[in-house]
Length: 248
Image (cartoon, rainbow, N blue to C red):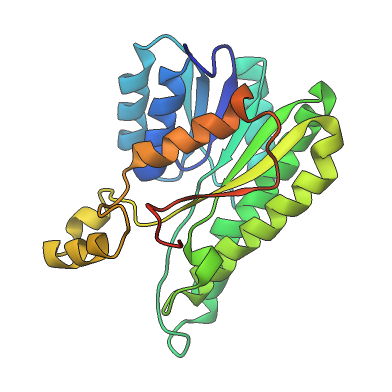
């Protein structure tokens, strides 16, 4: 059974890591996928190649979700290319970690712009389509850091906490039109970024997780498949922690 058969999704920042895992899971479940990347065209092209043989339509777009006009143009292009649009995954994000005394204004502003304003831009851009069809699933990628905070990540935590408040507000605004807005808050997810960390550091983190392992992109992707599918048709305004029990 393919849970997303005949649906179309936009995934921002999908050329690597969690976004790439989501793209794979969605295509495996029959979903057409439009995804964005910022700079790494080679990685984006390789993802298109990986997914194109599986049946659903896949296309990559070089676009900056943190730019309001670019987000509007992206949605217009996707509607032209795919005809329909059912799901938005706001996944694009960056980190610029530092203690408060060392964070520059630029580092704070850039993290808020890419992580939080991009969610506003993309949701605003897709809203008209979802309102017109009286249906749509909005899934915003936050983090457990946005729920509990983390030393050295005040800018990142602020951006991810903002996503939660934004999503809950949109759930209240758009619920009467059958548009759902939910958040996924990953914990320690092992990707190519964490692969560069010392093994003893990573193992220390694993031992602090009740399930005794780090998550992988597929764990997050499966949660997104659920929230995008009709299985979650009565779920909105929620934060789904995919963290192996870290916040238990």
